[in-house]
Structure formats: structure tokens, C-alpha cells
Length: 59
Image (cartoon, rainbow, N blue to C red; front, side, top):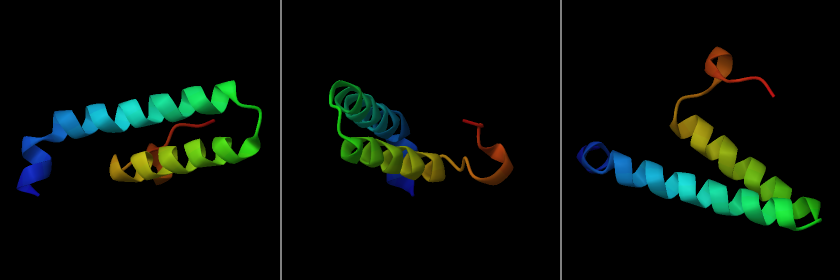
């Protein structure tokens, strides 16, 4: 837990970079498989950020 608190900004930047790269790949390729991967990554980040239930933004 202490590691997460001490390195939260670095972890957030890394997660944002992964999402941005995956989104770019999904936008540039026509296959729906990579879109599903991006969707999965976003769900994981949302759960880690506690964006669940009523705290979640609509589509």
C-alpha cells in the first residue's frame, strides 16, 4: 500500500499511457478484437479508480 501511495503519480501516468496507446491502436485498425481489449483495459482502470456503480460516467 505504501508503494502505491509513494508512486501514485507514476502509476497513473503509466496507466494513462497504456490506455492512450491502446486507444490509438484500436482507432487505427478495423478489427473489433482490439476494441475489446481497450474496453477491458478501461474497465480495469475504472475499477482501480473506484469508478463503479453511481460514480461511473455514462456512455
